[in-house]
Image (cartoon, rainbow, N blue to C red):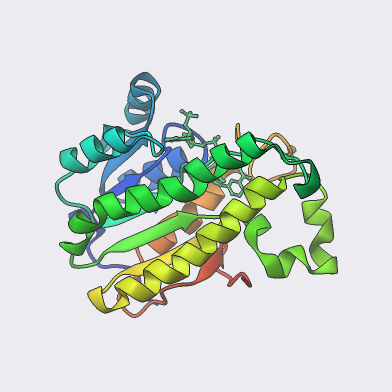
Length: 244
Ligand code: NDP
């Protein structure tokens, strides 16, 4: 697969880009010369991130759980080539039998319904792009194959509850459905397992776990996929395929 020849002509939106993996993804896209809408539900936090990122980054106030906020953001953004659905929460880390239904609902509201709402709102703009790309920031903990693999059980003994993990499994399914529905329109829709990263979301991560920048590089790779690249896949940050 070759890199896209002209990323400078492209415009990207990264949701939840005021910190963590989202901010790093926005930074790397801006460094590559793209116009980057830095999605942030809090204007002040977003403004600070935009200043830090520099380049052609600009603030887009966007709460992925708020239909009015999504509509206003979609109205504000004219052209769009790349949507990175990064905003996500881990509302609790309880196993399924101990799950709190409210936490479950909040998790799905952001990690699943938020992605559908944002994606659908920005589809008209993406459809006008010559090279539309959607990157869904998922998680290896959403892989049912890995979850049932005894070799990997260690990775999941460190937390990440049923609500979070199943929300990412649902996001993986949506990745396939969007990819299938949009393939004939030239879209590449893929999911990323960013690996365990030290961020506010992941208190389980230790100093031995990876930097968000490394995960962001994986997101950028999927964001800049060439036309002969796969769609509807699940990839690790290092480009290897993750089993569903
Ligand atoms: P952070 O908590 O650092 O960042 C999460 C971002 O999402 C923040 O900018 C946050 O904004 C934003 N966000 C949360 N809710 C909303 C909302 N309703 N509307 C808009 N933005 C929102 O976490 P990470 O960077 O670690 O997480 C980024 C993605 O990576 C998530 O989807 C996560 O599930 C995934 N991931 C992370 C892993 C890790 O080890 N860190 C591993 C696997 C997957 P605010 O600052 O306002 O809260």
